[in-house]
Image (tube, rainbow, N blue to C red; front, top):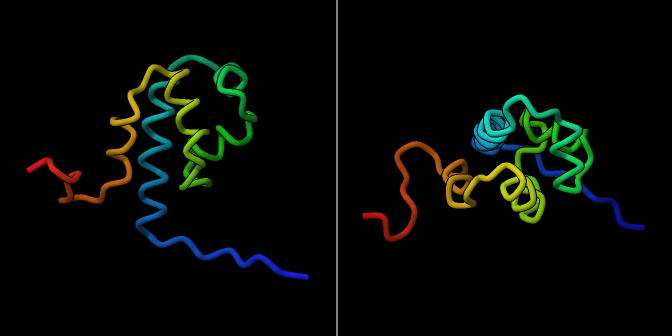
Length: 92
């Protein structure tokens, strides 16, 4: 039997998750967690955890579904993953 070991999150991972969660929460506006989660085909608890930074690295397809439902470009969400002072490749 194999045991999965969860690697502890770095402070940078937590910060990225908090930025992503804040952006998604702002985009959700007055819509309920349940309505947005259902439309994106994820559980309300998953969306709640993403918004609060408890899932700092959600699956790509989860983020893509939320972005589509909330009308956010994936490029805007990609900025959540960069730390201060870094730019995407080719931005210079």
